[in-house]
Amino acid sequence: MTTKSATTPTLKPGQARPRAAIAAKTLRTDRWWLAPLLTVIGLGAWVTYATVRVFMHKWYWVDAYHYLTPFYSPCVTDRCVEQASHFGRFLPGWWIIPDAALTLPFLLLFRLTCYYYRKAYYRSFWLSPPACAVPDGHQTYSGETRFPLLGQNLHRYFFYAAAIISLINTWDAVLAFHSPKGFGFGLGNIILLVNVIMLWAYTISCHSCRHIIGGRLKHFSKHPVRYRAWSFVSKLNVRHMQLAWITLGTLALTDFYVMAVAAEWIPDLRFIN
Image (cartoon, rainbow, N blue to C red; front, side, top):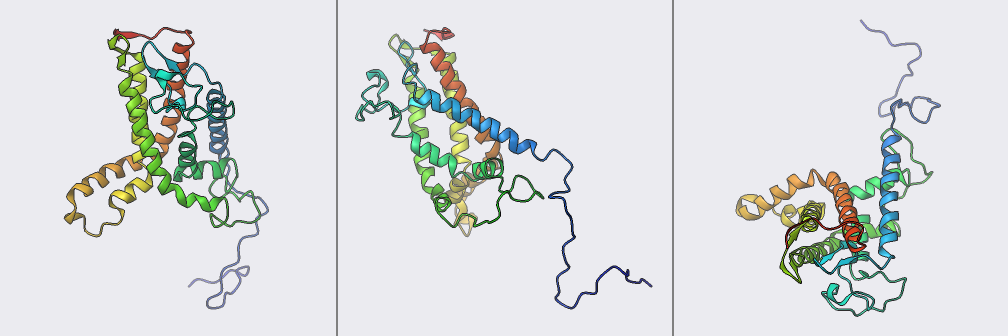
């Protein structure tokens, strides 16, 4: 026969057990702060680099091989090189206006409202919360029910814009095979292609894309094609976090390579022409 401890309070039916009186904010002894810290460093470094490059207004186009960095695609200001302006130059070339002003805001909003990136910057920059079993850095919490976080629900619409931008980047990669000397193939083409493939993988692995393809179907057996597409996207969706970081890396690498070749810091390694 068991007996109750003298220190255990007797609970009435339906009464909740009181919380333990723990003075420490968290009992975690592992390095729970490392992941948020690395996220701050990683995202902060990328945003700094991207901001500087976007407003440099130079070294974005390699005329000899038709390389165009994704940070300047499509180039639509009257400051752009004519050969790099595949969709015309219809915006004024003021310094404050990025040369890719037509697409950069949508790409930024797509990434900001991404389900993974929300988790990343909520935990790292806002400490809301910084980790599991660690208290929130704010006294009050309203979720995504107020402005500006209410706009997170527009993510599904930014997905369509991101898909169109991925098409534009794909077109840029295809055009890069046709230089003034005719068909050409170099290291820059490989970098552009890898970047485009990774961008497509990240874009279609989005939760909104998965829902669009098969989220509202009641009978997969009646839609075998959409079921196969949904299964493929679901496999990519599991890697959405990794793809989010990989694409940040491929974007920076592609831009830096195009900049280095355009500035004549390094020559492009050519295999054909």
